[in-house]
Structures are given as C-alpha cells and as structure tokens.
Length: 114
Image 1: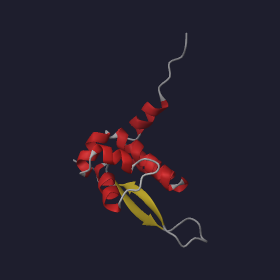
Image 2: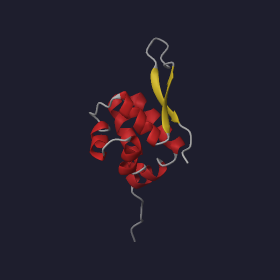
Image 3: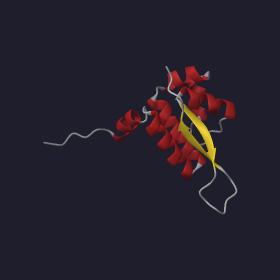
Image 4: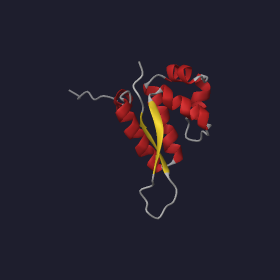
C-alpha cells in the first residue's frame, strides 16, 4: 500500500502562517536575490490568503499578484502596506560581508495583530 505524504506546498503555506517562520523564510530568500525575496513574500501572502492581504494593504488582489511576482517592482509604500498586513516589518542591519558598505534589509516579526 502506498505511503500517503503531504504536499510540500501545503505544508509550507501552513508553516508560513506563523509570523516567526515567515520572517525567517523571507530573510533567507532576501539573501539569495531580490526576485526570491518577492517570491517569498508572495508565498507568505498566499499563506495569509491573498485577497485578505490585498484588502488589508489597500491594493487590488491582481495588483498584489503583479507586485509580488519574481519580476515585480513594488513601490516602498505598497511593500510596506503588504508587510504590515502580514504582521511583518523591514529592519535594516549592517551587512555580514565586512568588505561591503551596503546595508541589507531584513524582514522582522512585527507586532501581533488583534
């Protein structure tokens, strides 16, 4: 009899509902590339139901999909609103690369929403 396994995607979306897990996931993706950062944010938004995130962020659902695709180019205001809707925030810290003078953005766990 075949062993039943859960879908990786389903488990990922379940895990990303936890703000701490979501922050770690997005931070890891941000270390890879800007495109992966946006894809990770999209995964977190899907975990929180895209329509609800869009409504809380004050953007159309379709615009949210476009903003968070791997070739998306969100404006800071929109990105800020989306992160806030998911209970996340951006924090800036010094780069780990001692030779680099460019700080890297980190997504940190935001305050719990009521």
